[in-house]
Amino acid sequence: MKIAIIGAGNVGKALAKSSIKAGHQVTLSAGSPQSAAEAAKATGARAAGSNVEAVEGAELVIVAVPYDKLGDVFRGLGSAVDGKVVVDATNHINAQNPGEVLGVASNAEEIQKRHPKVRVVKAFNYAFATRMADPNVDGTRLDGFVAGDDQAAKDKALELVGSIGFRPIDAGPLVMARVLEGMALLNVTLQIRHAWPWQNGWKLVGPPSD
Image (cartoon, rainbow, N blue to C red; front, side, top):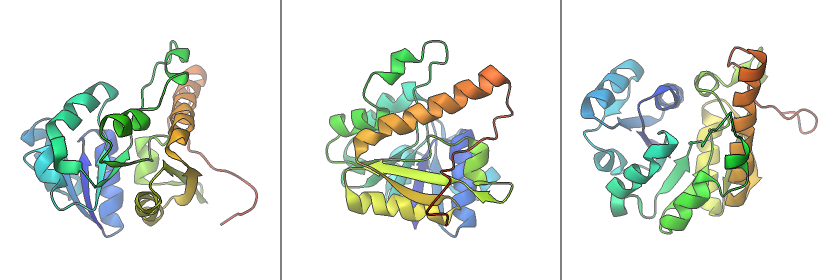
């Protein structure tokens, strides 16, 4: 699969590494060509000079940027992602005041609302970068949840999720992205509260057990 990853931080690099390991072709872009080049060198991906260049020809686009950069990213992309499968891997985290983010629409829903021609799905946001790079803990395959309204787009994302090592799980319509973002918030706040090592991941236990 030809994948474009917008964002050269820990999440973007982790997903680039695991996707390349799974045999996918990955192009990385970032806020600056230099950042993209450095991340590409570290992961084995191809660097793009701009986000628009990165998504050209991509079958699936992963957005892995800070929450406050989403608007700039999509304004810059314009119509370049119309009709494309776009995986929103972002979170709006407020550990001091969780209620600020728990009672509103998810990032993914906001993207879909503002860009109706984009085929938005939600995935990966609930996992730490360490788990995106290696979705196994002590031999246990972690779960990879995908939410979206476009079934074909969701199936494409589920294919990627499974190929990099997660157990792919269809989490339902895009509104369930609110739950996935809540899972991320819970995971983050647990690490802070209990001084855990930021290595945890989500796994449903019980049937089915594959």
